[in-house]
Length: 92
Length: 270
Image (cartoon, rainbow over all chains, first blue to last red; front, top):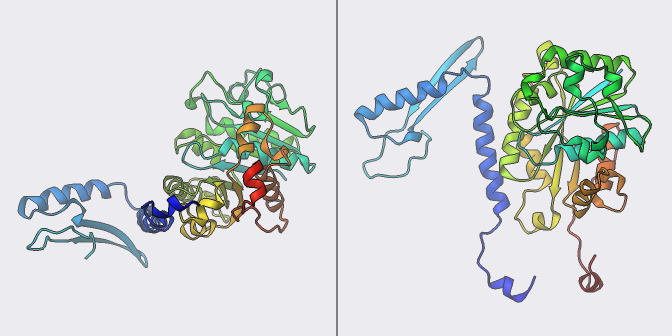
């Protein structure tokens, strides 16, 4: 570690960024595991339909199958854009 | 009782074959009768890492198709009497493997009294990888502390708990272990690489071993001598620890701290 290194601007702690990104994507992929194969297609088609009426972000449609006891619940949530264009968070 | 251990990862180039070779050698060095099988049909490489590439006459696919006996295809290691290598076919494609065929070969190895059969999986989640894991009792998931490798490992962990015979039979599934390779303690300390704790937290399974990034690994594969036989290298010692843990020994993790280079080491190299 030399004096010059001290002045180098570099992203701080990329490992924690990696960990946080992985934590989210892994949780998401685990939730999708074992869910029906048609979900991605259903999601895409729903997005097409919604886009006919509202200009939503591609991330705006969230679709999920959850098991509650012996029944499965298809959960669908759509984030409508704010008045001012903004990055959709993908969360409702 | 034969134990079938798959060494897998999803992502390529993380050290599956290096790890398979060293785990197999480590087990054989402890007196176990071990076979190590290359499931990467079309891209044979275990033979090179084991240093027996000039002695491959028959391969795994030949045995499955009844073109030779298992005994003819097993290559006896020159260093350890109880260690055998079964090479992958270099000329066929992965479709040459069938579940029935693989099962027959594994059963014959069990009948021959092997203690451990190490299945070196190809990268990916296609047929070869699926078959390498299907009959496993335990899985060693090789992972680098890097985003794509960790994500792929999680995918593999999902497959291990659903697409294996143990999972289908519902008897507890495959016992899963993480083997962290290419670990660089200095970069972890600098915050540039995820730590063992980070990876463990994300994937949620126990860590069998941490293999530090080491020049010894390349030197070992250059020479065709599995790195575990290089007692001088940290990687070799770390593999030996992993083998001990695989056999149920308690050993604390080593080589997790960055080496503090003194003036002497800085001048003369370490």
